[in-house]
Image 1: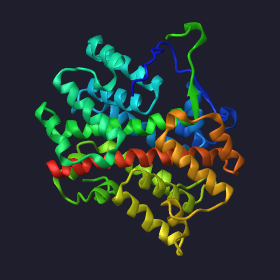
Image 2: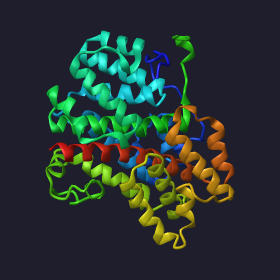
Image 3: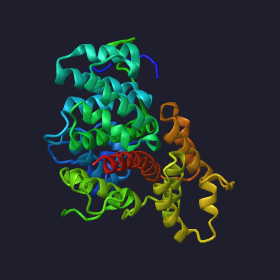
Length: 198
Length: 165
């Protein structure tokens, strides 16, 4: 995919739902529990309020996402973000790609990596370890049926442990999930005060 | 292995007591909430009116689109208990057609969200509501489609690790 990656990462997620969100004043106990609403915390975005229509899945998915993206040890967080960026680009979620590109750069202090991916897409020239991660993320996102045991070899050759590879798999797969929810239940919009970033 | 051994992913990846099953247990919160998500989506206390047959057929459709034979068989076997004459299975696997508004809307949405989530529009949600799905059912269907897309990729990685370990 060669579509330019937009950079509108500053500020909060401006996401316009296509389905009326749950009204917090009318929310059921199950919905409030899944949203982690307490008297001192009523700050919940439209995206979570739409997902709260099905509190049982929301209650599991939030801790699953956190365990996959922030779990201790294993694959460095920045490389999980790299997997998220690749999946998001291929799945067409420019907003998600942009947010996670920013997180990668904050963690690595190496802005040139995302600049290259922004310019040249997932075929960008990268250092070998990043290249191996990107190639696996591309294949897993595009066509999981095409993955074979041989696809582990380039990752192992770059020093990824089996746990690292499992972590990368979870992160890329999580964005097969997240990109689909975010793009089909509503749309990310560019905050007016920030102007058109293109 | 405290969190249900084997769970749905172990079973689908054929891990049993293998090294990849032990590897998965180094991520206990992932194991726990992945199985929890599966339970929430396929065996919810409140399904919002999206029936068990609809949920299972939608999952089989995703597995078919992703050409995952093990995942297809998993959902096909479950659907067989709900649809003994096999009409639904033949429909979602592409060799028959149901011309009924609600089924058409559900299966069209499965195809869109699986193949081209970036081209979804507001009218696609409106179609589901017009076909009689509640807001709860729309969100559960969306979570289900996205979850099976996730599940297929985790499975692909586990099979790869099983072959490489």
